[in-house]
Image (cartoon, rainbow, N blue to C red; front, side, top):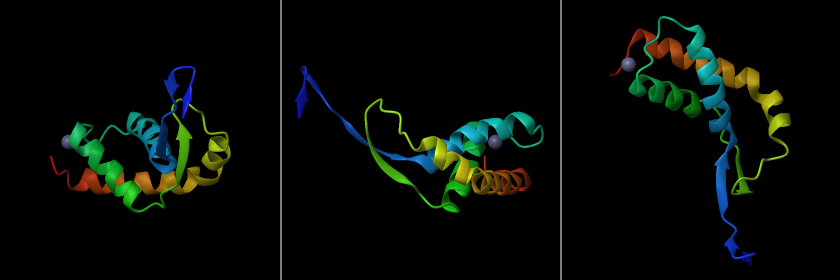
Length: 96
Ligand SMILES: [Zn+2]
C-alpha cells in the first residue's frame, strides 16, 4: 500500500517488552547493588520476559497504540514483580 509516496510499514510489537524496558530503567535507578553492565541488563530483561506472557500487536510505524495505557495499568504489578525477581537472580549470580 502506498500513501503519498510513502510505504506504510507494519511492525510487530511486544508490549510486554516495552513495559519491561521502561520499568527496568526505573528499578535499576533505585538499585545500587545489582550490576548494570549491558550483559546483566540484558540478562535481567530476558529472565523477566521469559516469565511473562507476550502481548503482540500489529502497529503502523510511529503509531502509538491506543490501548497501551490500559494494558500498562493492568500489567504493571506483574511486570514489576517479574523484573524484581530477575534483578535478584542476577544480583546473586552475575553472568558477565
Ligand atoms: Zn554485569
